[in-house]
Image 1 (tube, rainbow, N blue to C red):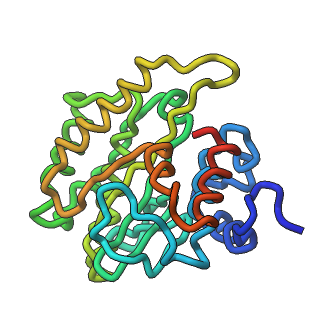
Image 2 (cartoon, rainbow, N blue to C red; image 1 turned 90 degrees about the vertical axis):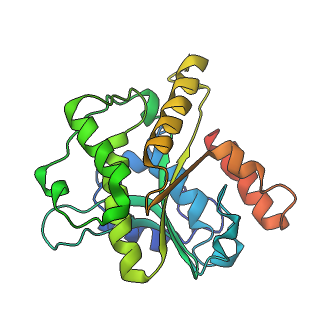
Length: 249
């Protein structure tokens, strides 16, 4: 019998195993079963492609990256040192040329207070000369020169540092992809259109600040990306529609 948390075609055992190994404690905490679960949205969306990676529709702006050879959920992009905590992304897509780490958001931009926790470890001179935009963002977040209300910019900086290291290990160009929902309401209360627009403005500001770095930053809403699935293979289109019906991203 399939797990009720998962749509048809999701390898539930594999996904649950990945979640159990990740740092978010989604299963133990009960967060995976929450009606606001961001992890449930991400694993249902990408999980269908774990066993059929070549069918994953191209992420927006990455059409030239090539046909995926690997799709998985709960991906750890390790820093170039062994100790400490390393960043976990919601999904990974690997092609012959590119390593794409996906950070997925659902209600978090409109719910959580954003904090900046960037230890001195992130100052180590290990990121390379083509990561200056992320390093400047790191420093400006710490000093308060850069402030974000909806975007967790500090988390994205950590992810980029992990991805630049992992990309070099795998001999792939590293990409950080920010995939976000734009829910209409939360707990029965509408989410203001101004908040949705401000979130998009903050994403664009982050993208501009890190443009040209080794880790390229791309983004799209779930609705925008899922909209490109229409007219594809019937099974892919049906899965996209099931995501929209289940999660209203």
